[in-house]
Length: 408
Image (cartoon, rainbow, N blue to C red):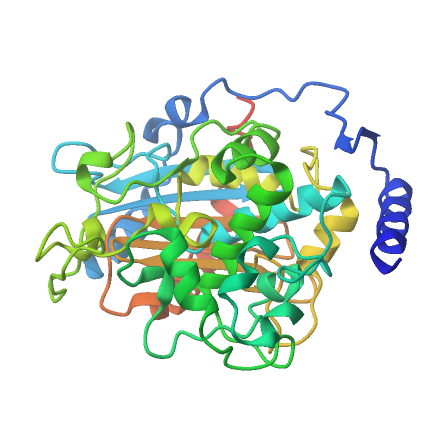
């Protein structure tokens, strides 16, 4: 009864919010959105030039030993500036359309997928993950701790499911198969009762990827392409490969910082690899950290979920509000790392060979930074980037051109 009542209540809420549905699917926008056929190819370095700012960005890049950087700046859904700095590989300059691994920015994309399913009344934040009414009940035989049956979709989104990375992150540890990883993890006790605390967890978003597959009846990648990227008119998002030989066309090469040590490959194929190429199962992390994309298309994706316009959002205002609602400094937002009252939202990502930061501001600006090089600071580098963004905004926001590269 509780689930049926929840479906009716949310269906009414979504209808009142303006949701148009046909057999549970949101209707497409009535008017087509003008856009470039291929943003990644069409938006080039030559379209953006602000010499003083470019010199500052490139100086920052060189000071941190970053081989290549891609930067985009958007204001109120208009792409004002997009440029690459340094090199994508030994012979190819970085461009705004170069695709890079997005690391944990992938979690924001996965959260969008979850909200799309909720808008179709196929999934809810309080939906149980395990147990007789759970989406992933087929894995119940692996469970040894009854607290797993308390986990909901929202717990996974907010890093409150009880998973801990103490002793190593299970998603980025060596394992032979997804089933083997799940058997190992679900056989362990949780670190705390779901909902009683929080600890950042890649495992939670890997499980959300499986939840999306189970509910949609599609592979995670297919669902995301059809229900998230295509409605936003983004063509270049792909799940990453693990090795250099699996690099996508138009994708950068990745580099480690000079002090980095080699490690055995995650799948046991090699005794020593650069960690960015085989040290972890990037593709296998799925929605926790597996996506590649460009700064340009990531900007467009943000424009389609910010609730600000003028570009039509692919999410209803109700969903945008849920994702960006502020609770407390100790509570993760849905997909975002942090959403402060007033409109400052942050999503960072750090991985071997990758640094990423997305920040939106109350004045409608969104700054995105992607790099193809690890730094010795790891995930803490995001703080340096946030400070760098503030510096750039103070000095150069007023000099950015008034235009929209999405439509020119």
